Image (cartoon, rainbow, N blue to C red; front, side):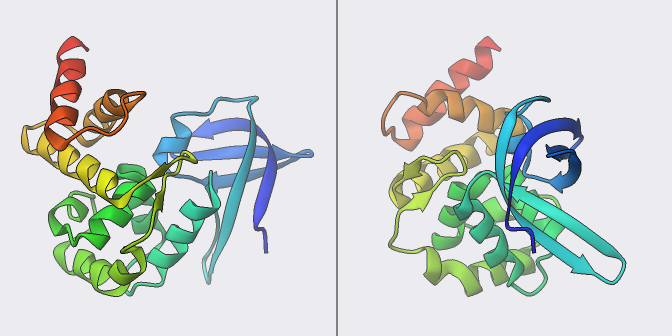
Length: 199
């Protein structure tokens, strides 16, 4: 199987990208957070997983090994397929997903299109013990403590409750916490609102 690819981004097609590896183009489905950061011609290394079905052969790519492992852990849960797992990673990223599962944050998980209450409950039931009591690794290669990640999730949930969209809320919070050290939920929300007001 294909476990890793190193090459150049050849083309971006919605939520997928074509990666040129020594003249062969591999079509990969990747989380939205990765799509938003890359551009054609960029050198890239992706950890990959092949999903084989009777009528489909798909390749999924991740920027870190930890993100790939989270994808595989979610696939092990009954009712979670590749599309749902990618949707979770695209909406919240690895840190927030692990934090939401560990803290049994059902409301946050069900914000993801296609993830209903029963599916979210299965994710929590089957994976929560794996994510408790250890550092969480973000899909950007950095690390957050579980407490910091939970604070970030709570801040995002507050912005969603105020009527902001998922993507604009995520982007505002990313700007709010950048180079700011650890902030409380209230501080994150206030800084994010300032960015949203100025955009």
